Length: 558
Image 1 (cartoon, rainbow, N blue to C red):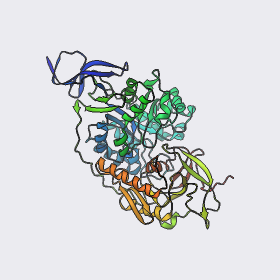
Image 2 (cartoon, one colour):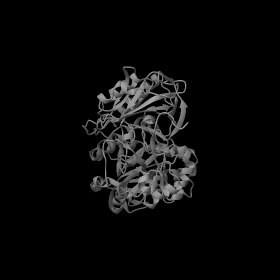
Image 3 (tube, rainbow, N blue to C red):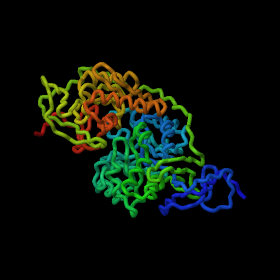
Image 4 (cartoon, rainbow, N blue to C red):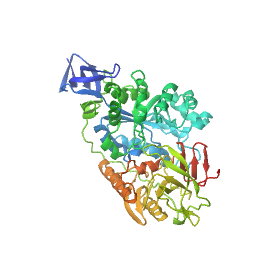
Protein backbone atom coordinates (compact mmCIF):
# COMPACT_ATOMS: atom_id res chain seq x y z
CA UNK A 1 0.00 0.00 0.00
CA UNK A 2 1.37 3.38 -1.00
CA UNK A 3 2.20 5.78 1.81
CA UNK A 4 1.41 9.50 1.82
CA UNK A 5 2.23 12.19 4.32
CA UNK A 6 -1.24 13.18 5.55
CA UNK A 7 -4.90 12.33 5.44
CA UNK A 8 -7.65 14.66 6.65
CA UNK A 9 -10.82 12.70 7.37
CA UNK A 10 -14.31 13.45 8.66
CA UNK A 11 -14.36 16.93 7.21
CA UNK A 12 -17.12 18.70 5.32
CA UNK A 13 -15.10 19.66 2.25
CA UNK A 14 -16.23 22.34 -0.20
CA UNK A 15 -16.57 21.12 -3.78
CA UNK A 16 -16.16 24.36 -5.74
CA UNK A 17 -17.45 22.74 -8.95
CA UNK A 18 -20.87 21.95 -7.49
CA UNK A 19 -20.71 24.56 -4.70
CA UNK A 20 -21.67 21.96 -2.14
CA UNK A 21 -20.02 20.58 0.99
CA UNK A 22 -19.18 16.86 0.83
CA UNK A 23 -18.04 14.42 3.48
CA UNK A 24 -14.79 13.05 2.11
CA UNK A 25 -11.15 12.47 2.96
CA UNK A 26 -8.23 14.43 1.51
CA UNK A 27 -4.95 12.56 0.94
CA UNK A 28 -1.91 14.84 0.83
CA UNK A 29 1.66 14.24 -0.27
CA UNK A 30 4.48 16.61 -1.22
CA UNK A 31 2.22 19.64 -1.00
CA UNK A 32 -0.47 18.26 -3.32
CA UNK A 33 -3.82 16.54 -2.92
CA UNK A 34 -3.19 13.11 -4.44
CA UNK A 35 -6.64 11.64 -3.78
CA UNK A 36 -10.03 12.84 -2.59
CA UNK A 37 -12.40 10.31 -1.09
CA UNK A 38 -11.81 6.57 -0.52
CA UNK A 39 -8.30 5.56 -1.59
CA UNK A 40 -5.97 2.59 -1.21
CA UNK A 41 -3.41 4.71 0.65
CA UNK A 42 -1.81 4.83 4.07
CA UNK A 43 -1.01 8.15 5.74
CA UNK A 44 1.85 8.85 8.13
CA UNK A 45 -0.40 11.36 9.86
CA UNK A 46 -4.20 11.16 10.03
CA UNK A 47 -6.12 14.26 11.09
CA UNK A 48 -9.72 13.99 12.26
CA UNK A 49 -11.58 17.18 11.30
CA UNK A 50 -14.56 16.28 13.52
CA UNK A 51 -17.12 17.48 10.95
CA UNK A 52 -15.50 20.91 10.61
CA UNK A 53 -15.96 22.79 7.37
CA UNK A 54 -12.92 22.72 5.08
CA UNK A 55 -12.52 25.23 2.24
CA UNK A 56 -9.76 26.11 -0.23
CA UNK A 57 -7.23 28.74 0.79
CA UNK A 58 -8.51 32.17 -0.13
CA UNK A 59 -7.04 34.24 -2.97
CA UNK A 60 -6.87 38.03 -3.21
CA UNK A 61 -7.47 38.67 -6.90
CA UNK A 62 -5.92 42.14 -6.97
CA UNK A 63 -3.82 43.87 -4.32
CA UNK A 64 -0.96 46.33 -4.04
CA UNK A 65 1.34 45.04 -1.32
CA UNK A 66 2.83 48.48 -0.86
CA UNK A 67 -0.52 49.81 0.34
CA UNK A 68 -0.31 47.54 3.38
CA UNK A 69 2.79 49.57 4.30
CA UNK A 70 4.80 46.46 5.14
CA UNK A 71 7.15 44.35 3.04
CA UNK A 72 5.86 41.25 1.21
CA UNK A 73 7.44 38.86 3.71
CA UNK A 74 5.70 40.60 6.62
CA UNK A 75 2.34 40.75 4.84
CA UNK A 76 2.57 37.01 4.25
CA UNK A 77 2.77 36.35 7.99
CA UNK A 78 -0.57 38.08 8.56
CA UNK A 79 -2.48 36.90 5.50
CA UNK A 80 -1.69 33.22 6.00
CA UNK A 81 -3.16 33.35 9.49
CA UNK A 82 -6.26 35.01 8.02
CA UNK A 83 -6.70 32.14 5.56
CA UNK A 84 -5.33 33.87 2.47
CA UNK A 85 -2.89 31.48 0.79
CA UNK A 86 -2.33 33.38 -2.47
CA UNK A 87 -2.45 36.93 -3.74
CA UNK A 88 -2.16 38.46 -7.18
CA UNK A 89 -0.25 41.70 -6.84
CA UNK A 90 0.65 44.70 -8.96
CA UNK A 91 3.90 46.32 -7.75
CA UNK A 92 3.28 49.52 -9.66
CA UNK A 93 3.63 51.64 -6.53
CA UNK A 94 7.30 50.83 -6.00
CA UNK A 95 7.83 50.67 -9.79
CA UNK A 96 6.65 54.27 -10.06
CA UNK A 97 9.27 55.22 -7.50
CA UNK A 98 12.31 53.20 -8.59
CA UNK A 99 11.41 51.14 -11.65
CA UNK A 100 12.75 47.64 -12.31
CA UNK A 101 14.88 47.62 -9.16
CA UNK A 102 11.73 48.03 -7.11
CA UNK A 103 9.94 45.14 -8.81
CA UNK A 104 12.95 42.86 -8.33
CA UNK A 105 13.12 43.82 -4.67
CA UNK A 106 9.48 42.85 -4.16
CA UNK A 107 9.99 39.48 -5.83
CA UNK A 108 13.11 38.79 -3.77
CA UNK A 109 11.58 39.72 -0.41
CA UNK A 110 8.40 37.80 -1.28
CA UNK A 111 10.43 34.61 -1.69
CA UNK A 112 10.72 34.43 2.11
CA UNK A 113 7.03 33.73 2.68
CA UNK A 114 5.00 30.58 2.00
CA UNK A 115 2.21 32.80 0.72
CA UNK A 116 1.90 32.41 -3.05
CA UNK A 117 2.55 35.88 -4.48
CA UNK A 118 1.81 36.12 -8.19
CA UNK A 119 3.15 39.31 -9.74
CA UNK A 120 1.45 41.18 -12.56
CA UNK A 121 3.91 43.50 -14.30
CA UNK A 122 2.88 47.16 -13.99
CA UNK A 123 1.45 48.41 -17.28
CA UNK A 124 1.23 52.09 -16.43
CA UNK A 125 4.50 53.51 -15.15
CA UNK A 126 3.74 56.38 -15.15
CA UNK A 127 -0.03 56.06 -14.88
CA UNK A 128 -0.45 59.01 -17.27
CA UNK A 129 2.11 60.40 -19.72
CA UNK A 130 2.26 63.83 -18.08
CA UNK A 131 3.07 62.52 -14.58
CA UNK A 132 6.37 63.30 -12.81
CA UNK A 133 7.12 59.95 -11.22
CA UNK A 134 10.37 58.16 -10.50
CA UNK A 135 10.69 55.88 -13.54
CA UNK A 136 9.30 55.03 -16.96
CA UNK A 137 8.82 51.38 -17.92
CA UNK A 138 8.36 50.56 -21.58
CA UNK A 139 7.50 47.19 -23.09
CA UNK A 140 11.18 46.42 -23.65
CA UNK A 141 11.87 47.09 -19.96
CA UNK A 142 9.14 44.74 -18.79
CA UNK A 143 9.67 41.85 -21.19
CA UNK A 144 12.76 40.33 -19.49
CA UNK A 145 10.83 40.09 -16.21
CA UNK A 146 8.54 37.43 -17.66
CA UNK A 147 11.38 34.97 -17.10
CA UNK A 148 10.58 35.06 -13.36
CA UNK A 149 8.30 32.18 -12.42
CA UNK A 150 6.47 34.51 -10.05
CA UNK A 151 5.27 36.75 -12.91
CA UNK A 152 1.74 35.96 -14.04
CA UNK A 153 0.74 38.65 -16.55
CA UNK A 154 0.25 42.36 -17.19
CA UNK A 155 -1.28 44.43 -14.39
CA UNK A 156 -4.20 46.83 -14.53
CA UNK A 157 -4.15 48.91 -17.70
CA UNK A 158 -5.04 52.40 -16.50
CA UNK A 159 -4.51 54.55 -19.58
CA UNK A 160 -7.81 54.11 -21.42
CA UNK A 161 -7.12 56.86 -23.98
CA UNK A 162 -3.91 55.08 -25.02
CA UNK A 163 -5.82 51.82 -25.54
CA UNK A 164 -8.57 53.59 -27.47
CA UNK A 165 -5.93 55.12 -29.77
CA UNK A 166 -4.12 51.77 -29.99
CA UNK A 167 -0.88 53.51 -28.99
CA UNK A 168 2.08 51.33 -29.88
CA UNK A 169 3.56 51.37 -26.36
CA UNK A 170 0.58 49.97 -24.48
CA UNK A 171 -0.34 47.62 -27.32
CA UNK A 172 3.15 46.10 -27.27
CA UNK A 173 2.87 45.47 -23.52
CA UNK A 174 -0.47 43.75 -24.03
CA UNK A 175 0.79 41.65 -26.94
CA UNK A 176 3.91 40.61 -25.03
CA UNK A 177 1.88 39.25 -22.11
CA UNK A 178 -0.60 37.45 -24.34
CA UNK A 179 2.07 35.95 -26.59
CA UNK A 180 3.60 34.28 -23.54
CA UNK A 181 0.29 32.76 -22.47
CA UNK A 182 -0.49 35.35 -19.81
CA UNK A 183 -3.51 37.59 -19.44
CA UNK A 184 -4.08 41.32 -18.90
CA UNK A 185 -5.91 43.02 -16.03
CA UNK A 186 -8.05 46.09 -16.55
CA UNK A 187 -8.78 49.30 -14.69
CA UNK A 188 -12.14 50.65 -15.85
CA UNK A 189 -12.83 53.44 -13.39
CA UNK A 190 -15.34 55.87 -14.84
CA UNK A 191 -15.73 53.93 -18.12
CA UNK A 192 -19.11 53.32 -19.72
CA UNK A 193 -20.13 50.13 -21.52
CA UNK A 194 -18.77 51.12 -24.93
CA UNK A 195 -15.44 52.14 -23.37
CA UNK A 196 -15.28 48.88 -21.44
CA UNK A 197 -15.77 47.09 -24.75
CA UNK A 198 -12.70 48.87 -26.11
CA UNK A 199 -10.74 47.08 -23.38
CA UNK A 200 -12.33 43.77 -24.32
CA UNK A 201 -11.40 44.32 -27.97
CA UNK A 202 -7.71 44.12 -27.06
CA UNK A 203 -8.16 41.13 -24.73
CA UNK A 204 -8.22 42.84 -21.32
CA UNK A 205 -10.36 40.49 -19.25
CA UNK A 206 -10.67 41.64 -15.61
CA UNK A 207 -11.80 44.74 -13.76
CA UNK A 208 -11.91 45.70 -10.08
CA UNK A 209 -13.16 49.29 -10.29
CA UNK A 210 -16.94 48.89 -9.96
CA UNK A 211 -18.50 50.86 -7.11
CA UNK A 212 -22.18 50.03 -7.68
CA UNK A 213 -24.35 47.11 -8.78
CA UNK A 214 -24.98 48.92 -12.06
CA UNK A 215 -21.27 49.17 -12.81
CA UNK A 216 -20.78 45.53 -11.83
CA UNK A 217 -23.55 44.52 -14.22
CA UNK A 218 -21.93 46.47 -17.05
CA UNK A 219 -18.65 44.67 -16.51
CA UNK A 220 -20.36 41.31 -16.31
CA UNK A 221 -22.26 42.04 -19.54
CA UNK A 222 -19.05 43.15 -21.24
CA UNK A 223 -17.44 39.78 -20.49
CA UNK A 224 -15.04 40.65 -17.67
CA UNK A 225 -14.07 38.68 -14.64
CA UNK A 226 -15.30 41.09 -11.96
CA UNK A 227 -13.34 41.52 -8.74
CA UNK A 228 -15.54 42.95 -5.98
CA UNK A 229 -13.40 45.21 -3.82
CA UNK A 230 -13.22 45.86 -0.11
CA UNK A 231 -10.12 47.77 0.99
CA UNK A 232 -9.27 50.40 3.57
CA UNK A 233 -10.78 53.23 1.54
CA UNK A 234 -12.57 51.41 -1.27
CA UNK A 235 -15.51 50.05 0.75
CA UNK A 236 -17.34 48.90 -2.36
CA UNK A 237 -18.55 45.40 -1.52
CA UNK A 238 -21.81 46.39 0.12
CA UNK A 239 -22.70 48.41 -2.99
CA UNK A 240 -21.87 45.66 -5.49
CA UNK A 241 -22.60 42.26 -3.92
CA UNK A 242 -26.33 42.42 -4.70
CA UNK A 243 -25.56 41.75 -8.36
CA UNK A 244 -24.26 38.25 -7.57
CA UNK A 245 -26.67 35.35 -8.13
CA UNK A 246 -26.27 31.60 -8.27
CA UNK A 247 -26.49 31.93 -12.03
CA UNK A 248 -23.69 34.47 -12.53
CA UNK A 249 -21.48 33.94 -9.45
CA UNK A 250 -18.83 32.09 -11.44
CA UNK A 251 -17.62 35.41 -12.94
CA UNK A 252 -17.06 37.15 -9.59
CA UNK A 253 -14.11 37.07 -7.18
CA UNK A 254 -12.93 39.26 -4.30
CA UNK A 255 -10.04 41.69 -3.93
CA UNK A 256 -8.77 44.28 -1.46
CA UNK A 257 -6.76 46.46 -3.87
CA UNK A 258 -5.37 48.72 -1.13
CA UNK A 259 -5.53 47.78 2.53
CA UNK A 260 -3.43 48.91 5.49
CA UNK A 261 -1.76 46.33 7.69
CA UNK A 262 -3.63 47.44 10.82
CA UNK A 263 -6.96 47.04 9.02
CA UNK A 264 -5.93 43.58 7.83
CA UNK A 265 -5.06 42.59 11.39
CA UNK A 266 -8.29 43.89 12.91
CA UNK A 267 -10.82 43.37 10.07
CA UNK A 268 -9.30 40.71 7.88
CA UNK A 269 -8.62 40.50 4.17
CA UNK A 270 -10.57 38.25 1.81
CA UNK A 271 -12.10 36.62 4.88
CA UNK A 272 -13.83 39.95 5.50
CA UNK A 273 -15.19 39.88 1.95
CA UNK A 274 -16.61 36.41 2.56
CA UNK A 275 -18.12 37.48 5.86
CA UNK A 276 -19.82 40.53 4.32
CA UNK A 277 -21.08 38.54 1.34
CA UNK A 278 -22.68 35.89 3.56
CA UNK A 279 -24.33 38.60 5.67
CA UNK A 280 -25.75 40.02 2.43
CA UNK A 281 -27.40 36.69 1.64
CA UNK A 282 -24.81 34.91 -0.52
CA UNK A 283 -24.70 31.18 0.25
CA UNK A 284 -21.50 30.27 2.12
CA UNK A 285 -20.66 27.65 -0.52
CA UNK A 286 -20.81 30.35 -3.20
CA UNK A 287 -18.93 32.98 -1.19
CA UNK A 288 -16.01 30.63 -0.45
CA UNK A 289 -15.93 29.57 -4.11
CA UNK A 290 -15.73 33.22 -5.18
CA UNK A 291 -12.92 33.68 -2.66
CA UNK A 292 -10.82 30.87 -4.11
CA UNK A 293 -11.65 29.00 -7.31
CA UNK A 294 -13.08 31.98 -9.18
CA UNK A 295 -9.98 34.06 -8.53
CA UNK A 296 -7.80 31.15 -9.62
CA UNK A 297 -9.75 30.80 -12.87
CA UNK A 298 -9.56 34.51 -13.63
CA UNK A 299 -5.77 34.45 -13.27
CA UNK A 300 -5.19 31.01 -14.84
CA UNK A 301 -3.79 29.56 -11.62
CA UNK A 302 -4.28 25.98 -12.70
CA UNK A 303 -3.42 24.22 -9.42
CA UNK A 304 -4.98 26.65 -6.92
CA UNK A 305 -8.42 27.18 -5.43
CA UNK A 306 -9.74 23.59 -5.49
CA UNK A 307 -9.79 20.78 -2.93
CA UNK A 308 -9.54 17.86 -5.30
CA UNK A 309 -6.98 15.50 -6.78
CA UNK A 310 -4.17 17.27 -8.60
CA UNK A 311 -4.42 20.60 -6.78
CA UNK A 312 -2.25 22.25 -4.14
CA UNK A 313 -2.99 21.29 -0.55
CA UNK A 314 -3.91 24.88 0.37
CA UNK A 315 -6.86 24.64 2.72
CA UNK A 316 -8.57 26.11 5.73
CA UNK A 317 -10.27 24.36 8.62
CA UNK A 318 -12.95 26.79 9.74
CA UNK A 319 -13.92 27.51 13.30
CA UNK A 320 -17.04 29.33 12.08
CA UNK A 321 -18.52 28.98 8.60
CA UNK A 322 -20.69 32.11 8.62
CA UNK A 323 -18.05 34.35 10.18
CA UNK A 324 -15.16 33.00 8.07
CA UNK A 325 -13.10 32.39 11.20
CA UNK A 326 -10.05 30.28 10.44
CA UNK A 327 -8.98 27.65 12.96
CA UNK A 328 -6.00 26.29 10.97
CA UNK A 329 -4.36 27.12 7.64
CA UNK A 330 -2.53 24.56 5.54
CA UNK A 331 -0.19 25.78 2.80
CA UNK A 332 1.50 23.33 0.46
CA UNK A 333 0.50 20.50 2.76
CA UNK A 334 2.00 22.09 5.89
CA UNK A 335 0.20 23.71 8.80
CA UNK A 336 1.10 27.37 9.10
CA UNK A 337 3.15 28.52 12.07
CA UNK A 338 4.74 31.90 12.70
CA UNK A 339 7.50 32.72 10.20
CA UNK A 340 10.64 34.33 11.66
CA UNK A 341 11.95 35.90 8.45
CA UNK A 342 13.24 39.48 8.46
CA UNK A 343 12.65 42.17 5.87
CA UNK A 344 15.36 42.49 3.23
CA UNK A 345 17.04 45.92 3.13
CA UNK A 346 16.33 48.38 0.32
CA UNK A 347 18.87 51.16 0.53
CA UNK A 348 17.87 53.84 -1.94
CA UNK A 349 17.17 57.52 -1.23
CA UNK A 350 13.88 58.30 -2.92
CA UNK A 351 12.96 61.66 -1.35
CA UNK A 352 14.56 64.79 -2.77
CA UNK A 353 12.94 68.22 -2.80
CA UNK A 354 13.74 71.86 -2.02
CA UNK A 355 10.36 73.41 -1.23
CA UNK A 356 10.39 76.71 0.67
CA UNK A 357 7.84 77.85 3.23
CA UNK A 358 7.01 80.86 1.05
CA UNK A 359 6.08 78.53 -1.82
CA UNK A 360 2.99 77.43 0.11
CA UNK A 361 1.09 80.70 -0.21
CA UNK A 362 -1.98 80.47 -2.44
CA UNK A 363 -2.85 83.86 -3.95
CA UNK A 364 -6.49 84.29 -5.01
CA UNK A 365 -7.94 87.16 -7.00
CA UNK A 366 -11.40 85.66 -6.48
CA UNK A 367 -12.98 83.63 -3.67
CA UNK A 368 -14.82 81.35 -6.12
CA UNK A 369 -12.67 78.22 -6.45
CA UNK A 370 -12.57 74.65 -7.69
CA UNK A 371 -12.38 72.36 -4.65
CA UNK A 372 -11.68 68.63 -4.39
CA UNK A 373 -14.50 67.01 -2.43
CA UNK A 374 -13.46 63.79 -0.74
CA UNK A 375 -15.97 60.96 -0.52
CA UNK A 376 -15.19 59.05 2.67
CA UNK A 377 -14.34 55.39 2.01
CA UNK A 378 -14.18 55.91 -1.76
CA UNK A 379 -11.29 56.94 -4.03
CA UNK A 380 -13.41 58.95 -6.46
CA UNK A 381 -13.90 62.63 -5.62
CA UNK A 382 -16.48 65.34 -6.22
CA UNK A 383 -15.70 68.48 -8.21
CA UNK A 384 -16.98 71.27 -5.96
CA UNK A 385 -17.19 74.98 -6.73
CA UNK A 386 -17.20 77.08 -3.57
CA UNK A 387 -16.63 80.59 -2.28
CA UNK A 388 -13.71 80.14 0.10
CA UNK A 389 -12.08 82.19 2.86
CA UNK A 390 -9.23 84.55 1.96
CA UNK A 391 -7.46 87.49 3.52
CA UNK A 392 -5.21 90.08 1.88
CA UNK A 393 -5.49 88.17 -1.41
CA UNK A 394 -4.42 84.76 -0.03
CA UNK A 395 -6.40 81.65 0.91
CA UNK A 396 -6.78 80.91 4.61
CA UNK A 397 -8.09 77.72 6.19
CA UNK A 398 -11.88 77.73 5.89
CA UNK A 399 -12.92 75.82 8.97
CA UNK A 400 -16.59 76.83 8.60
CA UNK A 401 -16.82 75.00 5.24
CA UNK A 402 -14.12 72.42 6.07
CA UNK A 403 -11.91 73.53 3.17
CA UNK A 404 -8.14 73.28 3.63
CA UNK A 405 -5.01 73.74 1.56
CA UNK A 406 -3.48 70.71 -0.17
CA UNK A 407 0.02 70.50 -1.64
CA UNK A 408 1.81 68.00 -3.90
CA UNK A 409 5.62 68.23 -4.18
CA UNK A 410 7.76 66.30 -6.69
CA UNK A 411 10.21 64.10 -4.79
CA UNK A 412 11.98 61.85 -7.31
CA UNK A 413 14.27 64.11 -9.35
CA UNK A 414 14.34 67.32 -7.29
CA UNK A 415 12.57 69.17 -10.11
CA UNK A 416 11.17 71.84 -7.81
CA UNK A 417 7.64 71.40 -9.14
CA UNK A 418 4.68 71.61 -6.81
CA UNK A 419 0.93 72.01 -7.06
CA UNK A 420 -1.41 73.73 -4.63
CA UNK A 421 -5.15 73.18 -4.43
CA UNK A 422 -8.09 73.10 -2.05
CA UNK A 423 -9.85 70.12 -0.54
CA UNK A 424 -13.04 69.64 1.44
CA UNK A 425 -13.48 66.97 4.11
CA UNK A 426 -10.39 66.64 6.33
CA UNK A 427 -11.81 68.70 9.22
CA UNK A 428 -8.47 70.20 10.24
CA UNK A 429 -8.24 72.91 12.91
CA UNK A 430 -4.59 73.19 13.98
CA UNK A 431 -2.16 71.09 12.00
CA UNK A 432 -1.22 69.10 8.92
CA UNK A 433 -0.50 65.63 7.63
CA UNK A 434 2.02 64.74 4.93
CA UNK A 435 3.01 61.49 3.26
CA UNK A 436 5.22 60.08 0.52
CA UNK A 437 2.45 57.62 -0.34
CA UNK A 438 0.58 59.38 -3.14
CA UNK A 439 -0.89 57.18 -5.86
CA UNK A 440 0.47 56.45 -8.36
CA UNK A 441 3.49 58.68 -8.86
CA UNK A 442 4.11 58.83 -5.11
CA UNK A 443 5.27 62.38 -4.82
CA UNK A 444 4.83 64.13 -1.47
CA UNK A 445 1.26 65.10 -0.63
CA UNK A 446 0.13 67.16 2.33
CA UNK A 447 -2.99 68.86 3.67
CA UNK A 448 -3.20 71.28 6.55
CA UNK A 449 -4.77 74.20 8.31
CA UNK A 450 -1.71 76.47 7.98
CA UNK A 451 1.50 76.76 5.99
CA UNK A 452 3.85 76.29 8.94
CA UNK A 453 2.29 72.94 9.87
CA UNK A 454 2.29 71.76 6.24
CA UNK A 455 5.94 72.72 5.83
CA UNK A 456 6.98 71.01 9.08
CA UNK A 457 5.28 67.77 8.11
CA UNK A 458 6.85 67.81 4.63
CA UNK A 459 10.32 68.47 6.00
CA UNK A 460 10.00 65.66 8.53
CA UNK A 461 9.16 62.98 5.96
CA UNK A 462 11.95 64.28 3.74
CA UNK A 463 14.54 64.02 6.51
CA UNK A 464 13.58 60.43 7.39
CA UNK A 465 13.68 59.21 3.78
CA UNK A 466 9.93 58.94 3.37
CA UNK A 467 6.98 58.30 5.60
CA UNK A 468 3.88 59.83 7.14
CA UNK A 469 3.99 62.77 9.55
CA UNK A 470 1.50 64.74 11.60
CA UNK A 471 2.50 68.26 12.63
CA UNK A 472 1.07 71.21 14.53
CA UNK A 473 3.09 74.29 13.76
CA UNK A 474 6.76 73.38 14.17
CA UNK A 475 5.94 70.42 16.44
CA UNK A 476 5.94 66.91 14.99
CA UNK A 477 3.24 65.01 16.87
CA UNK A 478 3.86 61.64 15.21
CA UNK A 479 5.88 60.14 12.37
CA UNK A 480 5.85 56.73 10.70
CA UNK A 481 9.09 56.21 8.73
CA UNK A 482 8.66 54.30 5.45
CA UNK A 483 12.24 53.36 4.70
CA UNK A 484 11.38 51.11 1.75
CA UNK A 485 11.01 53.56 -1.15
CA UNK A 486 8.93 55.91 0.98
CA UNK A 487 6.10 53.36 0.71
CA UNK A 488 6.66 50.57 3.22
CA UNK A 489 7.97 50.19 6.73
CA UNK A 490 10.98 47.97 7.30
CA UNK A 491 9.58 47.06 10.73
CA UNK A 492 7.76 43.84 11.67
CA UNK A 493 4.05 43.98 10.89
CA UNK A 494 2.91 44.45 14.51
CA UNK A 495 5.23 47.42 15.00
CA UNK A 496 4.12 48.95 11.71
CA UNK A 497 0.50 48.55 12.82
CA UNK A 498 1.36 50.34 16.07
CA UNK A 499 2.90 53.22 14.08
CA UNK A 500 -0.30 53.49 12.03
CA UNK A 501 -2.34 53.70 15.23
CA UNK A 502 -0.02 56.40 16.57
CA UNK A 503 -0.42 58.61 13.51
CA UNK A 504 -4.19 58.13 13.60
CA UNK A 505 -4.22 59.21 17.25
CA UNK A 506 -2.14 62.23 16.27
CA UNK A 507 -4.57 63.13 13.48
CA UNK A 508 -7.41 63.23 16.00
CA UNK A 509 -5.48 65.90 17.93
CA UNK A 510 -5.40 68.29 14.94
CA UNK A 511 -8.93 67.55 13.73
CA UNK A 512 -12.23 68.78 15.13
CA UNK A 513 -13.90 65.45 14.35
CA UNK A 514 -15.13 63.59 17.42
CA UNK A 515 -15.27 60.31 15.49
CA UNK A 516 -13.13 59.57 12.42
CA UNK A 517 -15.12 57.31 10.08
CA UNK A 518 -12.49 57.15 7.32
CA UNK A 519 -8.73 56.82 7.07
CA UNK A 520 -7.41 60.32 6.32
CA UNK A 521 -3.93 59.17 5.29
CA UNK A 522 -4.89 56.66 2.64
CA UNK A 523 -7.71 58.97 1.51
CA UNK A 524 -5.14 61.73 1.00
CA UNK A 525 -2.88 59.34 -0.87
CA UNK A 526 -5.52 58.84 -3.58
CA UNK A 527 -6.19 62.53 -4.17
CA UNK A 528 -3.18 62.67 -6.49
CA UNK A 529 -4.31 59.94 -8.92
CA UNK A 530 -5.41 61.59 -12.19
CA UNK A 531 -6.84 58.43 -13.75
CA UNK A 532 -9.64 58.29 -11.14
CA UNK A 533 -12.61 60.70 -11.32
CA UNK A 534 -13.13 63.51 -10.79
CA UNK A 535 -10.81 66.26 -9.50
CA UNK A 536 -7.23 65.50 -8.40
CA UNK A 537 -4.02 67.37 -7.60
CA UNK A 538 -0.54 66.61 -8.97
CA UNK A 539 2.79 68.41 -8.65
CA UNK A 540 1.79 70.25 -11.83
CA UNK A 541 -1.54 71.51 -10.59
CA UNK A 542 -5.23 70.71 -10.41
CA UNK A 543 -6.38 68.00 -12.86
CA UNK A 544 -9.95 67.59 -14.09
CA UNK A 545 -10.49 63.93 -15.04
CA UNK A 546 -13.74 64.65 -16.87
CA UNK A 547 -12.14 67.28 -19.11
CA UNK A 548 -8.80 65.47 -19.32
CA UNK A 549 -6.87 68.65 -18.61
CA UNK A 550 -5.37 70.83 -15.89
CA UNK A 551 -7.53 73.68 -14.59
CA UNK A 552 -7.00 76.73 -12.39
CA UNK A 553 -7.84 76.71 -8.71
CA UNK A 554 -9.98 79.77 -9.30
CA UNK A 555 -13.18 79.14 -11.27
CA UNK A 556 -12.86 80.86 -14.63
CA UNK A 557 -16.20 79.94 -16.25
CA UNK A 558 -18.70 81.81 -14.07
